[in-house]
Image 1 (cartoon, one colour):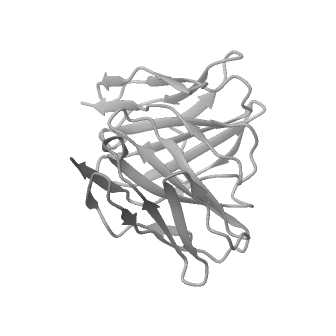
Image 2 (tube, chains in turn blue, yellow):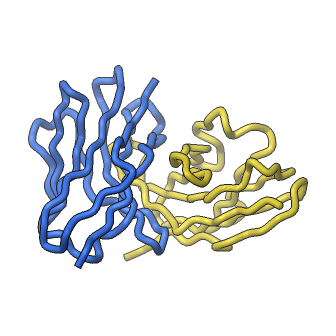
Length: 115
Length: 115
């Protein structure tokens, strides 16, 4: 079964500091994709970053980067220079090539940014 | 930036009643999805839809559920006879293609409360 696990229900970080959110997944697929989505209080889920499993290089989008460890099936999100607007629920999600693009989500991590 | 819009934002319905949740996907997107999130639980895939038919559905999507694209813009989820356990946040999403690499864009969600 394809599962995604986020073991940190809540995290907090000081403004301008760096925080890392953890995600692990379980799959027997070889061709898959991993995503981090952000859900602020406004509720809309926004794609933060995406990683293709076949790529060895970790994805980076401005202050957001991932640490993708394929052998360990780990996909953590690092937020550098945290800003107040980063406060949100963060979901790790996974899909695979033959899935019809259904996303499998983790439980979510609520991130608080302290001024 | 184009957005997926969902209406209503909150729907309160008596158990046993029919409810229709509405979504307007991004205009040039061809693939549409419904997910739900029961309070305190993971976001779960319900159904994907393309070319006026269901592409894939989960075990949650039983005969009580149906989806439709009644015109060129709306995408609806109907629950025929609601149960208490249908209370959840329902998210609509759309993507340009059904490739796993293609990101899905989510709406704000509709909070469905069954009394």
